[in-house]
Image (cartoon, rainbow over all chains, first blue to last red; front, top):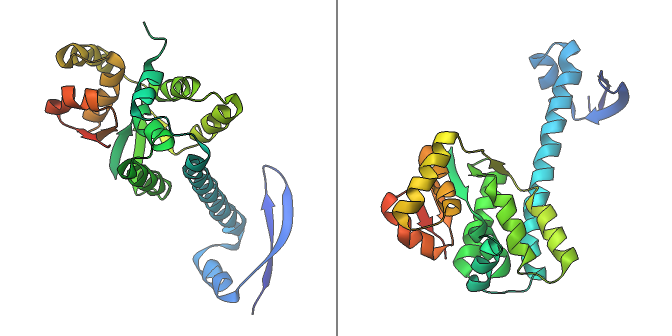
Length: 86
Length: 137
């Protein structure tokens, strides 16, 4: 059975929607979990994935910044870090 | 999991200098931290020093603001120093003829049995005998 449909209920936001997933994943999931645990399990998995993506993007964004920045040299950098300190 | 302490000199040299070793090292460090292969930590001083470094290196205020915003989202855990660690930073600073600011990063690395990665050659030369420090540059 491909595209099993389930309902997700998130108690904190009362958000419900239908999703589809390959049958083999669905079967593994229902073997592993009680049906009442499915929403929590899927929510946690999705949240983890979102966090991973967010962090990945922030790292790549930071690395990509290099190309937009002028190169000032080590001496200026060291001086700038400590400038204004007594 | 391996833990690395990073300072402002390393991250600013990555952004504002063209040293291949630093570019390669920091890129790998950040990507490894994102994949949770390593843990990156620093002291609360890091964001202030990055901010000051940008303030006096970049004339473009908007660009500096953009860089700072992206820096603040990096996977670097900020660890406050304990009173004992602050006290030790002062002693180390005298011993190495260096600033308390630099010594505070180093003491965090020593206390966490990790390594302090810095691009500050002057501090590295004065404190390398204490170990737990690597010069990246």
